[in-house]
Image (cartoon, rainbow, N blue to C red):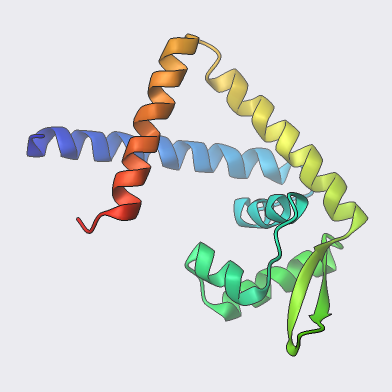
Length: 146
């Protein structure tokens, strides 16, 4: 791979990620005034993940203090509740509130619909090729020291 190609691919993928991120943020603001980070936490909880503040901080690359502020906001919005971990009284596990579940489901549906419209103009084979290429890049970046 030539340097120019790598630079061009990196620039385009970054631009796509930024555009999709901005679109996701704008779409999610219309459903419960969510940020994308909040949405990802809600969806993880919706799918049965066991989350605590440290796990979220590590996954998002944030400090625990930043996650604490985000969770405080989410508690005020009645999206999540913190429950003391019976195995370790110093930690808390997150659970969805009924309101959090409804908003997570609505937000997921709205976001899926938005992106389905954005990508409706490409064929099934183009979608499959695109996904395979993206998966390859993700794997390469996640597993290799570049």
